[in-house]
Image (cartoon, rainbow over all chains, first blue to last red; front, side, top):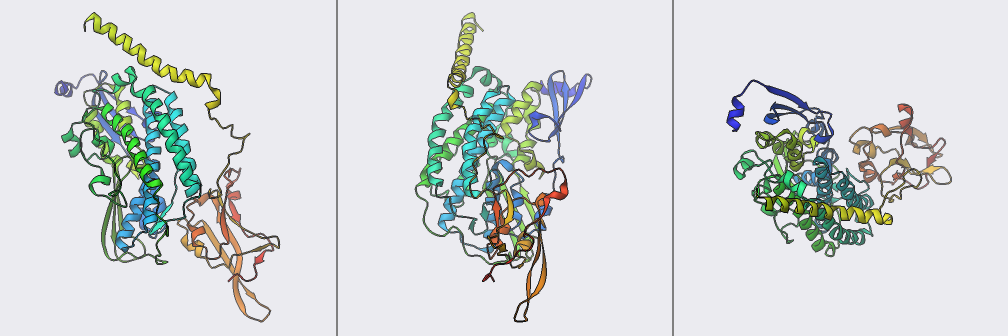
Amino acid sequence: MIEEIARTEQGDMVINLGPQHPATHGVLHLVITLNGETIKKVEPHLGYIHRSIEKMCECLSYRQFIYVTSRMDYLSSHINNHGSALCVEKGMQIEVPSRAKVIRVIMDELTRIASHELWWGAMAMDTGAFTPFFYAFRERETITDIMEETCGARLTMNYIVPGGVMADLHPDFQKKVKEFIKLFRAKTDEYNELVTGNVIFQNRMKGVGVLSKEDAISYGCTGPSARGSGVSCDIRKLYPYEVYDQVKFEEVIENGCDSFARYLVRIREMYQSIGIIEQLIDNIPEGDFQAKTKAVLKLPKGEFYSRVETARGELGVYIVSEGATTPYRIKFRSPGFSNLSALDHMARGSKIGDLVAMMGTLDLVIPDIDR
Amino acid sequence: MTPGEYIKNIVNGVKSLLTGMKLTGYYFMHPKEIITEQYPETRPVLSERFRGEVVMSHDEKNEHRCTGCTACELACPNGTIKIITKFETSPEGKKKKALDTFIYHLELCTMCNLCIVACPTDAIKMAQNFEHSVYDRNQLTKVLNKPGSKLMEGVE
């Protein structure tokens, strides 16, 4: 049927979604070719929020450039900082103290939960339910409060420095996190009650936006978007960094390949993150929170690559160094860009009304795609 | 679809809707569990690490701890800080570098905390003030050392 539609030229209509459209969660511009209500082609146009972050990073020193990476994927800013710091540490061969490693992982998982909470609220809003957004933000607020207390900022934390973390944990940190875990366990059941089990929601998600396992791999999808198609791609499991090889958690994989599978992956991932935090929160080792580093960092000549699992997928940081105080070239492999490329394939042949829901399940953050 | 399935679908749909509405009804009947902050009236409680803006701490004798070493200026990624130094002559006749003006561009600052970490004498710190809106952009460029202030005794 798709081929048949692709052949018809008469009666095609081209509409623009965005760049200023609330459903695109940013300044994404989609040029959609329609035949009636059926989507023939979706063409994303990028560049509306390009800030040349890679070039900016090349002008800054290895300590300074880390804060810029918070501005790429602002919902998992802490994980972005983590990936960049890991790459610098790899080049400088800095041994991070075990306390800093555990703190970083706990913060990573809190960020992941906060990101998925926001996604859940926005996802429900994309499908027409408004109230879940407020429920999601209620729990997310607790995390941002914890972040604010220890890191000093709520969204763009810049808590990680090469060699450890910027400051020690706040004395109340463990108590607050335990309170949050208790609250989260009680409240997430409300999510399932309110949205997951809803028949209207399920009808709009099941069988919509199908992305097969082969396609997910060939489009380079990572993160929950690929794991909903049955691809095992969790960097935390496959290439463990920090203390991920010492904690027990399950790589969440759903084989549904549709929007609902991707939705379930994220919901189940939140529980896994809570499990990781529960294992680590009482076992934060004593000691330094920061390794002693030189005042001016100079990476040796060569190429360095590190990868982390952000809330959206794999973030790769690639640094080419010429031995100077600033990187010669820096490249970020952002998860959102590859995930967006699969949208055209997913949307072809489906109805226009499902497009926004499909975009929602990809969890797009536009500054991450454009950089 | 048989008529039986059709009715079953409707019953299931109504059931799932009611499950959701039960939660909405619960919060409707329990207004105390709603946590809305009436912002301008109730002031938010901010932790002491919250990064609002860079300030320079002065003691009651109008003395600060800044030696004008420009470590913060070098650490800043955005060129937010500009330090102008002068030469002061001590009573023994020695010439010494001292701080003249500490210019802070709040409009360029991203609150990354790198200047605070870099400062060797703890002269600057982050304040918890977060309401920065002004009518003129020039008002965002601030001089942090107070007029007539000088370096604290014993700070090198």
